[in-house]
Image (cartoon, rainbow over the protein chains, first blue to last red):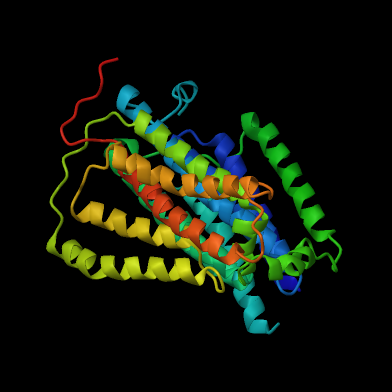
Amino acid sequence: MTTPIVYASAGVAMLCIALFGFLTARHVLRRILALNIVGSGVFMMLVALAARPDPPDPIPHALVMTGIVVGVCVTALALALLRRMFADEGSARLPEDREFG
Amino acid sequence: MTADAAALDILLAVLLVFLVWRLLTLSDLFKATILFIVFGLLLSLAWVRLRAPDVALAEAAIGSGVTGALVLDALRRLGAHGAVDEARPLRLNLARLSGGLLVACLGAILLWSVLSLPAGWRGLSAEAMAAMPHSGVTNPVTASLLNFRSHDTLLEIAVLMLAVLGVWTLDAEPKPSAEPAGPILDLLVRILLPLMVVVAGYLLWAGGHAPGGAFQGAAVLAAGGILLHLARPFYLGNHVIIRLVIGFGFAVFLAIGVMLVVGGGRFLEFPSRHAGTLILVVEAAATISIALILLALFVGNVREGAGRDAP
């Protein structure tokens, strides 16, 4: 009974740390990694709570699998945007972040 | 639950949170990316502990594998200068205080809602299990993905196609000169590629009654393609055949849905007598398309020696 609570709490912690990192990071690649982890935190909460009944609830599992695949799409598109910005402007930071240290 | 298992769970949970904190604060983004891949692999271990083997397979192959390859490839193109980030993201200062407080509030609310769920809460598992005999398959996750929630999965494949279009549109840089692959990678590809094709086929077939399915199979197939691309770089341009194969899975899925409407049923509501066959057909078509889509996301649209379009 404790296993789902342990992982769900870890999911909340991952989500919060990564969300704060997403807000404060300057480098776009770091932001993409943080966004991925925000997603993983949400997935962790969903799957942990789905593990409480026996057998586990398959609906959150299917939702999370859809989420993982959409996540890789978002990552690929964001990385393509980053590559294009870096090729055009020579910086891996968004324009409003470039003046900061 | 034994004490060993509880210790493993707590250790894994703490390790995951620690990795997140580490990879968000390291100034070397290459190290951060490696930690991100490790994080994904440990996450699949956590999925196994949470009795979600389908999610574990998808995480290991897509979440950690393909995403890791994509990030490493982007990092290589940023070069040594672009891969360093001296800004300290997680450091708290006055300007970040409001954001930190908001995130902390969100965390407290989430934690409270997780802990206050009644112990007997069962989610939708009873409804899903009751509908299983009509789903045509015996793996409940495959049943949810391709039968109960087939609209979502259809549109998910559409999202994948849109992402490829986006990457093709954005990628206009000339390809960095591809160094010839060493004999070790070449040999590895020769041994691994046939195995990966077989494993992908097995995962697709097994999806009906055991952990596996179209997405996991496609991810393994795409990983094989990425390995092949690393050993012998090829150009996967927007050739008409490539476009047709990328759209094939979506087209088959949609055609079956429309056929059901014409036959007097509802859109994507599989009749239980033929559901197993229809799901296998959709999954087989989707596997090929998704594998090519994931590979196209990695290869992008760069061409040897092609210059960037003039603005």
